[in-house]
Length: 116
Length: 115
Image 1: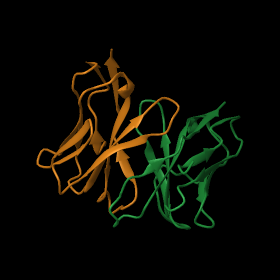
Image 2: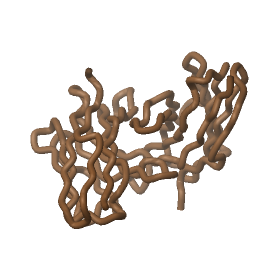
Image 3: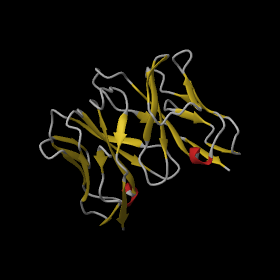
């Protein structure tokens, strides 16, 4: 399978706990994105990397959120001291860099987070 | 404020007929537009895209039309099939506050194709 993969697919945690999600992009894609989707909304941008450099962060990404892509391959998204409002689907996507012909972002299946 | 708007939360069509999904945007600097399809409990799947220098792009049963003066795009599905039933998201890229990375999504339109 050469698509974007995410792990875990589902995570249930108690308020105040820390959680970490992993994303493995398509191998030849050097751009990696994190989005969050809540019920009735479209995906909302959180942050993106080009190789290992984090190039942009949304205002949605509070200080409790941190993302890394240490070797320019897989990425992790950590949420510290989770709150019930963090419950959402966390989506990862990857793409070739802009400037090439294809601008499409390809999404993984997502991680569904439920904070009790 | 929403920069990408899908004003119809749902659409129901008969199998074999045309489905038309609409999308409006406010940022004239967007230079690339995409449509994604999403089934429950799955990530969005890329469907079709169009550059702002074009007004039409076609791929099999799917055609996207772009009207830059009206800041409007539409997705036509002909003929519609029951397997097309899903939530369709319109997304735009480029020019947003100088960003070259992220996609801005609408809220989606739920398409139901009835046999």
